[in-house]
Length: 330
Ligand SMILES: Nc1ncnc2c1ncn2[C@@H]1O[C@H](COP(=O)(O)OP(=O)(O)O)[C@@H](O)[C@H]1O
Ligand code: SF4
Ligand SMILES: [Mg+2]
View 1 (cartoon, rainbow, N blue to C red):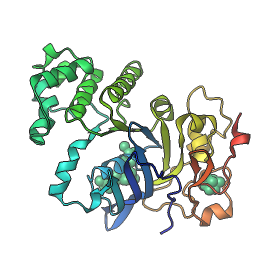
View 2 (cartoon, helix red, strand yellow):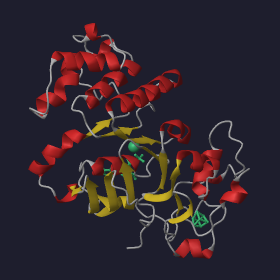
View 3 (tube, helix red, strand yellow):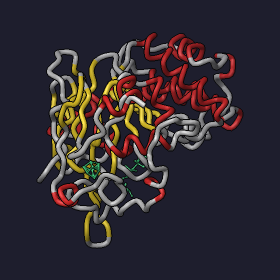
């Protein structure tokens, strides 16, 4: 199968997660939908990787397949050198505490019948005797996320959406994980609360020394929190770059269109690009999957799938006719 390439993967001893050629298919009325189509990326210790793209491009499936829920159809997911796709369910149990998730909807992701204390301590119960734990640990985490430990006996409905997301964050940190996957953690929150939660995630990351995968459909949300950003489109990787570099020199036409769609953006791109219909993931376009909406598409784009290739230091793009950095500095 033609792929999106692995040129962007790093040969660095600090690599914690290395996903190669990951494919995730779901059965749908007789056929299959390929939600993730040969995706590769890596994450190094202490790094925040932003994953961005329109709804339906496969961000959540990519994230969930890293923790093997669901198991990828093919490809590998190395965590500290161990391929999680090859582990039995039992062996996977010993690794899962290191890989935690925070979800979009804080209220529905918390059990309404449990107290905040129980919710935060839940991982310790499920995963057993991992490390020390005490009421002090729960109180410390509650304080760290800005919830008064005296409210530990309250239930989720007694808190706002932003406070519930703080509780979810405390819950994710309780097992001292190495990687936290944040799937649109602020998308359901008021704009005024979003920045507080983003700041909290950054503080928690620094305090507890974790790496983050941070997913959002909104490029402006990933900008400040990410060290590196991966742009996805219809199950494929379009562009990977350091966050500053990506925003200074967006090179893939899809990245440029996403950037132009940010309110207040000065980017000069045909704003109609993303108004054209998103093709179905069930029957994606041949060649470059963005060709049906791309203002620069050629016959080559309609038949040959572009591979990721370097266009700058740590900057990779999968496009036959990339918007080259010098010209992009507008
Ligand atoms: N359990 C599932 N069964 C069938 N199709 C699915 C399932 N989960 C996701 N999909 C499809 O896979 C594609 C990617 O979905 P998803 O990973 O949720 O994207 P995103 O998080 O970027 O919005 C979509 O076309 C979606 O409809
Ligand atoms: S490969 Fe072609 S269709 Fe795809 S983004 Fe580049 S120019 Fe556009
Ligand atoms: Mg999603």
